[in-house]
Structures are given as C-alpha cells and as structure tokens.
Image (cartoon, rainbow, N blue to C red; front, side):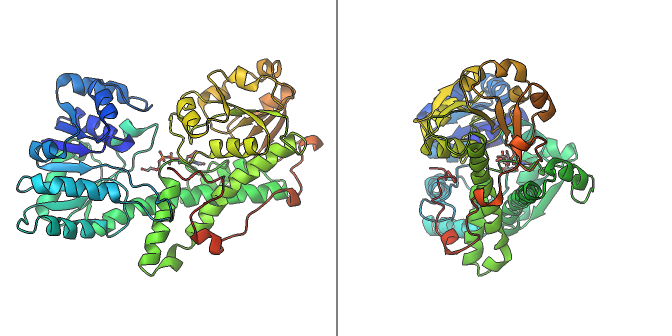
Length: 474
Ligand code: UDX
C-alpha cells in the first residue's frame, strides 16, 4: 500500500520505518527540516535500538521517503497515519491537540477521494468524533474521507520490536471499509496471529489511556509498598517477587524505585483526569491523582535519602548521578525522574556530576547548570555519594572495588533496586536502597519526620504541577 506517516518523532519515525519494512511504500512527513534530512539519510534523530538498521534498509530500497509537505502527503496515497505529539498543555493537565488539529487542517483540502486518516497519537476520548466534525466544516462539499483511531503501544527502547510484533492491534473504525484498509496494512502481523480488536473510535482512544493508567498504577502501587517497607523494615523487592508469582498480579511493572517518567505515562494520566472531569466522571479516575503524587513523592524520598547519606546537607558536597534518561536504552529525558532528583540536589547546593550512556546531550539542553560526563568514573571522582537513578546495564557491571578508589566516601543509593547490594557492601560500601532494609546501623532508614511527604490530593493538584520534582515536558 502507499501510505504516509505524519509526524516523525519516536512514534512516527519508528512506525514509518517498520511499515516500509513490512512492504508498504511510505512517505514520512514532518515540519522539522533537520529531522527530515537526517531520516532521509538513514540517521535516526534519537537513540532507539534497532532503528538505524530498519531505517537505512528501507531508505536504501526506496520504499521509504520523507517530505515536509502535507499536500504532497495527501496526494501520495489514501491512508495517512497521524503520529504527532500531544504534550501536556502549559497551563493545565489537559492534552495539547494543536498539532493533531494542524495535520487535519493541512491535509483536508488536498485529500484524495476515499482517503482514510488514521490517528495513532494518544488523545482524549472523543477526539475522533471532534475531528470528523472539524473535517466536515473544513471541506463541507466533500464527505468521502474518513477518520479512524489506531493507538500505538510501543515502548521506547523496544520500539521497533513492539511495532513489528505488537501484543495487539486496536482499530477504532466507523466503517467496514476503514476496517478492511487497516487489516490490509497490518496483514503480515495478522497472519502471524497478533490479536486484532476492531471497535468504535471512542473505545480505541480509551484503550490507550486505560492501558497507560493501569501501568502507572502498578508502578505507584509497588512504590507505595516501598514506602511502607521503609517504615516497617521490610523488603519491597522480595514482596514484589512474592506477589508477582500470582499470575493474576504478575511481576512485570512491579519494580519499585524512583518511579515513572517519560513522554507518556505522566502526561497521559493527567490528561485522562482532565478529560474525565469534562465528561463529569472525575470521581471515577480520582485515584490517578494519588498515583501521580506517589510517583512524585518517590523523587522527594530519593532526595531525602541522598541528603541523609551525606550527613544532612548537600552544600559543598560532590554528588555523582548515574543515569539521566527516564529509563535505560533511551536518550529521552522528558520528565526524567533522575534529572528531577539531580536538579533538586543542585538547587540545594550540591555539586552534581551526571553520567548517562546516551542522554547527556539532551540532559544538558534541559539542565545546563549541572556537570556532565561520558565517563562514570569521572562522575564519581571525589563524590560524597553515588546515586544510581536510571538502571542502565552498564551500572550493574561497574566494579565497586574499582569505584571505591575514586570516590570520597563509599556511599551509594540504589534508587532502582537493580544493583547487587551484597557485592557493593562486601567491597566496603554503605548501601541504601529504596524500600529495602539496611543491615548496618549506619544506614538505618531515616526517621519518618525527615521524609517530607507532600499533602495528598488537595486543590493544589488541580493546578498544573509546579513542583520542581515534576519536570513537565516543554
Ligand atoms: C509507555 C508504555 O509502556 C507504552 O505502552 C506506551 O506506548 C508509551 O508509554 P515508555 O514511556 O516507553 O512506554 O516507558 P515504560 O517502559 O512504560 O516505562 C515508563 C516508566 O516507568 C519509566 O520511567 C520506567 O523506569 C518506569 N518503571 C517501569 C518503573 O519505575 N517500574 C517498573 O516496574 C516499570
């Protein structure tokens, strides 16, 4: 099929390359000329394992091309995937749909008869219906194109694999024809047995936000348990292992630590709450506020634990931060919990040195005041404490005995619960891990009074997050 992919960020670039890889002729569209140039030369504009290969292969074969013209896109084919961003609005929790609207406005006058516009971006429920009305208004004399919603569930770091081998495909369609077109696009996946759920657009839109809300809830649930474990001297990792054996619960997304960040989970649960309020059902998802607050509190708890480890004040202390991205195998620092913690420590007078295998450039652009290095040893040089904030594999492979030779004090905080704490302890390190008991008196959890816990859902929550620990994406 000849199809276009409009918006070539994480979602669109990967989708375009993968659609070409399964045999379609694809035209990628973006307003960013530099991004288009890079992609057309087979260079991914961001770090994503496996993307370089699939991109190069398909650019070279001629099946994948790029343009900045929506008119060219409209004339190129009959099926158009909309993959533009839907960030959080600056002054509210709702999603900013201006980029989605701009695509519809730009395409509408040029669309070929019988075209199908398929939204993939995460949007508030009701968006398809609104866009159908908008399209009718824009080109009232023509009624022969359609809109459908086909949400995307890819994870950064696994984006290519998730696109080529999804857990399921969800198609929110208004006609049998639209359904047939989507089945044709995804024919290789359907032949491989990927479940295909055909439904109405509102349900499809909701599937995405419901899935992300559930994942966020799982993470905040286990982080709430970590808080209880810290107070009770229990071990959240063993607790997660034990409850995770129950197949009704499952162990995935039950890793306690610094919590979730990134361009999706935080903004999606906020946008969902804002939309539920508009629909008059805010009580139904009021728990998501608590999920968000537990998540932000983990950042605060991490800063408090780090401060305790260095004797009560960061002033004049050099602090090593391992990890800047919101998760490993990504260079994405949007709403990164690690950077939020690093920024808070810097604000309290700490001399913060940040290492990350892929995210240094992006982190520097957001927080230029911190020190950055591409060498973890340099980050740890003379450090009063080492903070393990993003669980890159490299950090699990660090040799605590070697690192002991460069730090000022052998103190480490494992805020992701993925280090072999016994190995670090036997190399003479004082180790603190979130939600895990400390064996030596020197690392007994801080008394409750030291852990500053912001007030739960109050009027403040309704306003946009202004807490420095919630780095709302720009
Ligand atoms: C998420 C959804 O998983 C994906 O389906 C959707 O399409 C986009 O949003 P992504 O943002 O790539 O994907 O990240 P994900 O792997 O879900 O992790 C989100 C955050 O949760 C990360 O900051 C991660 O460190 C954190 N996390 C994840 C935990 O703190 N604990 C866990 O057990 C799992």
